[in-house]
Length: 252
Image (tube, rainbow, N blue to C red; front, side, top):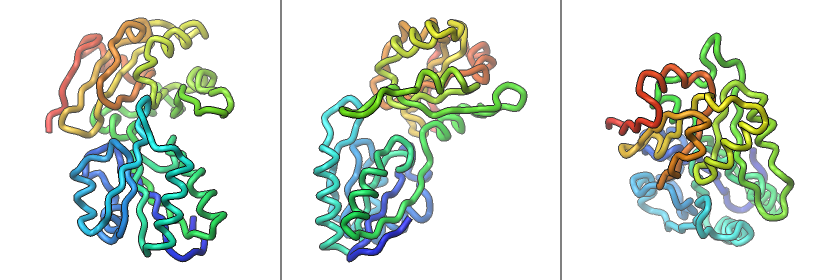
């Protein structure tokens, strides 16, 4: 998407964290950027790809202090009026739970050019590391990405209905609500034996995986780092092979 304006704001996906999972376009734009507004979880190795840019941290980490969206919008506008190339660097993909539409609409209304650069989202990075397809033939013909989190003043989340309707579910920003998520799914009719994989720090050297089921998710300790909850029959074989709740560190 592009609109006309004095400078260009690039909403760039930083991916799940591993620098070599950036797209070629993202790496090029970082190298050309004059200023970069980045999320809290973007690692320093990725920020190092913008050696000539002013780096501005704007928070946006689930469950912790973050910069107000309206203030971020204003910062992007001011930067676009001053610089030729402005990068808004978002974890994962900008268009998936990244509030990109708010920045796009605000900047477009001000006549600022906006270009979207997609990134690898956590569910795909986790699937690659696990070697388990989200849509394994014969077991899963549908997959849904959901989050139980809702912003102030927004409508109630329909994550539960979406999760019940899909064969495989990827739950974002829900690691700290594992018990509530499991209880909600079980109460709605999902078997407590349904396999679950909790992937922490997907794509990074410190990645870890815990296999369990919905019953086990109710008592599983919340991960310290950013994590994704994956639910579905596609994980049953891996859970059986490794043992429930067994944690495996990612080999770099």
